[in-house]
Each structure stands twice: as C-alpha cells, then as structure tokens.
Amino acid sequence: MKKTKKFIGLIAILCFVMLLSSTSLAAKGSFSVSKTSATLTEGGSTTFNITTTNCEGQFTISSSNSNVVKVSSTSTWVNGSTTITLTAVKKGSAKITITASDVGDNSAEPQPVTGSRTISVTVNEKTTGGSNSGSSSSSNGSSSSGSNTTKTPTFKSTNQKVYTTGDCNLRSSWSTSSSATSVSKDTELTLTGTSTETVNGYTWYRVTYQGSTKYIASSLITYTKPKDDKKDDNKDDNKDDEKSSNKNLSSLKIDGIDMTPSFSKDTTQYTAHVDGDVDELKINAKAEDNKAKVAIEGNKGLKEGDNIIKVKVTAEDETTRTYFITVTKGEGTEIDTGLKLSELIIERVDFESTFKPDVYSYDLDLTSYVEKLDITATPSQADATVEISGNEDFKEGENVIIILLTSADGNETATYQIKVNVPAEVMEKAAEEENISLYILIGIAVAVVLIAIIVVVRRHRANREDDYEEEFLEDDDIKIRSDKQDGIGGRRFANYEDEEQLEEDDEQEESETRSSRNATLDEFFNTQDDDEDGPRRPRGRHSR
Image (tube, rainbow, N blue to C red; front, top):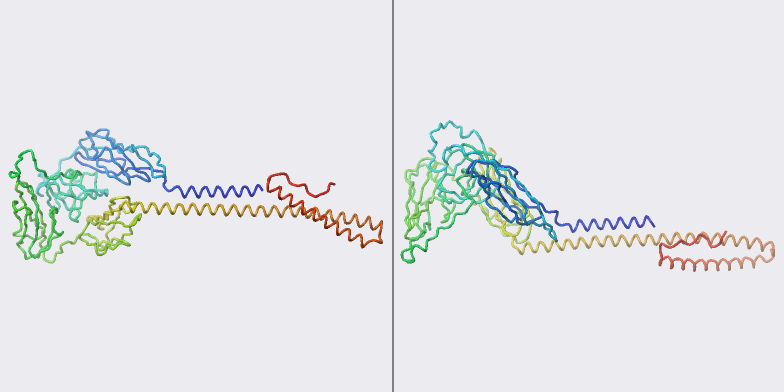
C-alpha cells in the first residue's frame, strides 16, 4: 500500500512539472544596455542600445552632467531594442543612468521589471585638425607625410538615419586626404558604424550613401530630421506677392549615358561612366517649377577619373538645391566595381525577381508570422564576409534587417536594408495558434496522468484480491484437512464398518465449509471498499 501511494505521488509531481513547464511561456523579463563606458571628443557623439527580453515599457535616460554629455531622449518606450545617442558638449565626465520606470514582463499577468543600468562617459578636449567640409585642399599648413593613415578606427555596427549639418565632403576612408563626394546640407545618410576613437583629429562615423560606404566626421551630422521649408504667411497676406520655394527637378538625363540610381527629385547624388574619349556631356535638366532657374557646371573638359557635375536649381524665392553627378571617365572602367550582393534569396518569398544588386533598400510585408527569415546573401567578392542583423523576434509593425558586407581587407563595406512589416492581424493569428498548441499540450499531460492513475489503482486492487483470496484458501484448506483427518480417524475407530457413509459426510461438510468461506470473502471485500485502510481480518477461522 505504501509503495503504491508513493508511486501515485511521483506521478502527480511529474504532472505538475509538465503543466508548469508548458504554461511558462514567457521567462522572467529583463533588460540590458549595449555598453558600460564610452570615451568621446568634444562635439562627438556615440550611440547605445536598450534591449528588452520578454518585457516592454517606459524607460528614462538621464545624464548626471548635461553640460558635459547630452542624451537624445530622456524617456522612451522599448519593445525589443531602441537606440539612444549621447553627444559630447565639453571636456569632463558624466554618468548616464537608464531606469525601468514603467516596465512589465510578457506573462499572462504582467509582473513589474525594475532596476537601472549606468554608462560612464569621459569627454576629452577636441584637438586641432583639418576640416572635413569644403574642398579637399585644406591641410592647415601641416606636412602631408602620410601620417593620416597610421591608425584605423574600430566601428560599432548600427543602423540609423542621420543628416548633414552643412555642405560637406563624404570621404572614401577616414583620412582628410582621401577622395571625396560633395553633398549639400540636410542630405540624408544611413549611419552603419560609430567610433569613439580620434583619428586625424576627428571622430569618424561610417555611413552609406547611394549604396556606397563613406566616412564623415561625427560633428558634421545630426540625428534630427530637418524641417521642411515653410513660407512665412505673416509677412504678406497677399498671395499674389508670395514667391515659390520649389527648387526640385522634374527630370534629369544625360544623352546616351545611364545614371545610377534612377532619377528621383528627392535624390541629389548620382553616378555615371563614360569612355576615355568623351570630353563633354549633354545634360537635360528640367525644373519642376517653371519659375525656377537651372544652371549646370562641370560638364565640359572631363578629365580621367572622377568628375563632379553640379546641377543647381534656384527657386523663385532664391533658395537653392544642387544635384551632383559623379562622372567617372576611363576606357574599360566599369561603372561600379565596388562590393555588393550578387544574389539575395529569401526562402518562401518570391524575392529573386525583386532583387537588384544596385538597389540597397527593400520592403517586405509578412502574410504569416515567422520568428526569422531564411536569408541567403551572396557577395560579389568571394572572400567578403556577410553579417545579418535584426532577423529575429519580429514584432508588430516595421522590423529592419541589415545585411552588412565587408571586404577581406576591411577597407570596403556595403549595406543592404530589408524593412519587414508585420501587420497586427498576423500577430493576432500567431497568438491564437500558440494558445491552441498550449491547450493541446495541457490536455495530453492530463490524459497521461489519468491513465497512469487508473492503471495503478486497478493493479493495486487486483493484487489485493489475490493476496486475500490466497490467505483464505490456505486457512480453509488447513481446517478442512484437519477436520477431515480428525473425523475419519475418530469415526473409523468408532465405527470402521460404516466407512462409505463417513466419506459422504466428509464431502458434505467440505462443501458447506467452502460455501461459508465464499460468503465471508464477499462480505470482507464489500467492507474493504468502504474502508480500505480498516483492520485486516485475522488469519484462519479457528482459534488455537
């Protein structure tokens, strides 16, 4: 009996553990930050990520000395990962504190997640160096002995939109003497790498512009999107006197030459290639507003290598926008020999017909939920490495996958971006399917336990009946043999001649004894069903 109870107890514990493991769908919530310390130069900046695990909610970010280090946001909602920017104001030190102010885990009955993380930031005084803006001839009088390439900065991968604070150059490397691409103020760039190291007097950031990897001083970018040009309606209420600020092109073409990328009025940077015998280009540029003026510079007297052609549009209100065309002149030179993807395949998605090596951004809408996409990215250079980030734990709304290519020597990179949109109805359907799976698992666990209990009870009862029946049979057989021997012996000596009658009497007595025994067994088992743990019947039916 005791062994049986222990066995049933073990089964009950096993059932409890199975149910506990099946219902614990969400582990305890927690959060982390991507760095614990940082060193900046005055005017520089860096970023860090707040990442939540099985939780979401509001976080506060504060600086112990905002005169030294400023934060881009003092409060933010995080569900997955969010990037925060730190900007160095002046020399000194500050501690950045990230606190979970209103955060709960993802369990059925959310529990609060508390705590804080800190980042120690040291800001060094900015050293004197050459300018990264304007022409490439600025060298502040110092010797160009090649010392600009003595140090290679280490970049931390990121993915953010940034904007130039003025007209400046995007460099092909972190040297102020490297080749440059001129861009105008408020040009949108994709920030792919940040650094805290000072090289050639600047903290360099890695960016992607028109599909090419460039480098720019951190002080020349901002994370704040510039405001659209607006007219001051209070200056003059007479609409006839208002002047148009439209400085967009409606079309831009080069006769006989293809430009990359395809023209868009909001895109100001283009590239093209011409043979070595071409000295002049015929450019057709038309303004969107017929009151705007268009001027073209640099399309004559092309030299070998890169040539910058400027298409300047002056609006009626005298504001301007410049479109740049980088024309590479050289016989046999390809338009783009840089690192790129030669193939991009996404399992169960018709993506091959959509993908083009020179297109670096894509949009993808999910019709059913998946935790991650099965992506095959093949670089154009066999020895290049491919790093895919953001391809896990998709949440509702927009999710960004970054594919970063890096050449074998580390000097060339390219970045592709896939924006994965997960609609609310897809998330709801996934949650319903997850609940159905949970209910099935719980039902199976309960059924297994019930079957095990029934089997144990039946085996126990069968064993108990066998034991008691064996006891009664043994005791009654002993009594029958004893009574029979006593009767035969006594009566044989008393009346030996009537032996046949004696045997008949013994058989009748034995039959009555067995009937009595069966009635006693039935009564005993009926009593045991009512009180299983009651006292056991004494062995045998006679006293000694």
